[in-house]
Length: 86
Image (spheres, rainbow, N blue to C red):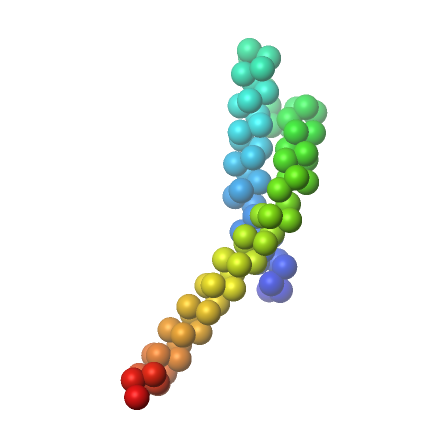
């Protein structure tokens, strides 16, 4: 899996939450239940994702980088327990 795929997979729950929130908000505006595939909901979700897209991608990239560093340190410590003890 390429790093970009990993970033996209981490963004999916955030985008699902945006869809859920915008669906609820539109339902509140109209005073009735609105489906997630409603045209207005789709437009608002697109606006939000476009507005925060780069910030979201940067956050996910930083998260992946931090996770990789922690995993690397963990592996180095496990494979060479004296590493860093001197």
